[in-house]
Structure formats: structure tokens, C-alpha cells
Image: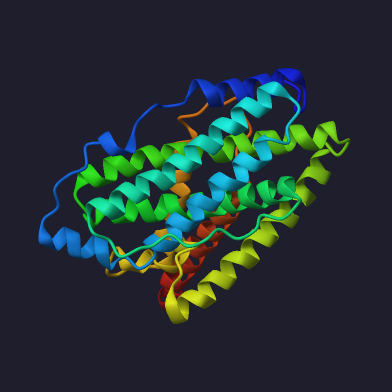
Length: 283
């Protein structure tokens, strides 16, 4: 399959729409939580900003869908917009059901260049999802909440996986159509937008040191979920969970590669460093 071809477009769009899962957040099997679980859920400091982020995501994707000429791509992007808005609705249901202190804030203006806003959002979602995969696994293993709650949020994790794979393929298809499809040019474009996403993430981390706003909660609040949290364990979980979740999707599609590659290199370096430290006393 040639990247940027009609066959490529057909595959990533139809795979995305075919894997859609219909559900109503109101009728999900929300569990009854005991007082301890309620306290843990309510103590998480970023629900208000997560809700804001999902509402903004829905607005960005919906606005961008309205600008697309290709009917197949337009249908798929509109479906993603529906899913992002449904994520926000799921959070509203949870906040209301469990008495979480979170209120909706006005959405900021998206600006005139909604395509760039969509691209920024897409690369930011790649970063957030990679980190979020690790947090989700750690939190579930730690029993932070009952398994039934994690089962509900597993649906969202699967949809986020679909979203970033769809985005990466759409971005490659777009670049080829614009005459910028050479692998090195696509890599440079990706690095530029990943850099923008990283700067936003670092800004959030700095804010989180004072009063966490939750926008990139996976990086700033991972230690909430497990005592004894270490960066290496977090990175290992991000890397392994990313591989596991990507394996569930069509192997013929492009997948986000930069963060898994960086994480893999970092883990190899950490293992080598630890090995040398153990060997040093013996030497």
C-alpha cells in the first residue's frame, strides 16, 4: 500500500468507522462506590480540566470536519468529533453521579486556522495517550478504584488508541497530497509538532507544581496512583501498554513511532546504567 494513495485513505478511514462502538454514557454499568473509593475519586485534582480538555477536543474536531472536502475523510473526522464529545458527556455523568467538585468553564476561541488546531490537538493526543497508557495500568494494578470503574474507562482508552492511529495516518496522507510526502519531510513536520506538544506539556507540569490544572494529568499526577512510583516503572508501563494496545489495530496502518522509540532507547540506557553500577563494585 502506498502512503497517501486512495487505498491508504480508504483503509484508515474505513477501519476507523468500522471499529466504532455505540454506547450511552448514562446507561453504562456505573458501580456503587464505598466511602473510601469515593474519597479517592473525589481527591483526584484534575477532573474539571479533563472535562474542559475533552469539550475543547470535541469542538476542534467538529470544526475541522466542517472544512474537509473529501467525503470519506470528512465522515471519519466527524465520527471522531462525536466520540470526543461523548468522552466529555461520560465525564459529566461521572461528575454528577459521584458528587465530584468540577464545573464547566467557557471554551476559548479556536481561532481561524482550525486545521492547525486539529494537528496540534492530534500530536498532543499522541503524547497524552502514550503517557496515559502507563498511568492507567499503574492505577488499575494499584486498585485505585474498583475494577468496574476501570472497565468503563477502558472504552475511552481504546477510542484514544483509535484516534491517534487515525490521526497519524491522516497526517501522512495529507502531507503526500501536499507534495511533502518524503519520509524525511514528514519526520521533520512531526518533530516540529511534537516539539509544540512538549512545550505545552512542560508548561502544564510547571503549573502543576503550584496548582495542578489537569490538562496533561498523565505526566503531572502519576504519583497520585501508587506509592513508590518511579520514573523507570512509569516508562516501562507506557512502553509495554502502548505496544499491547497498538497490536489490537490493523497492522497495515501507520502508528505513532517517536515516543515509543524514545522510551525504548531510554529504557535500554537505564538498564545498561544499572548493569554497570552493579558490576562496578565487583570490578
